[in-house]
View (cartoon, rainbow, N blue to C red):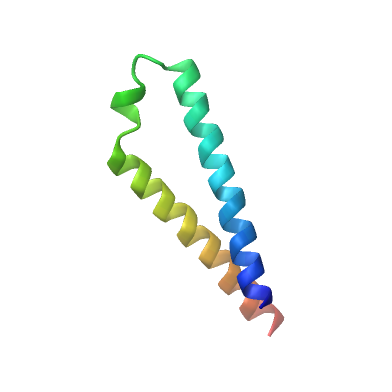
Length: 65
């Protein structure tokens, strides 16, 4: 149960960081936003964030067991 809570916490935090980066790009580079942030980039970054969250949870699980 602890691992599920940790995974949801880490994935939520990474998602918030990605949302903040998306807004940062849209504010500072509005004319190039559609060239930089494509659906392929979005999907890749979301998968990377979930893999990082999963990796952290596995690392914590291995460390404490």
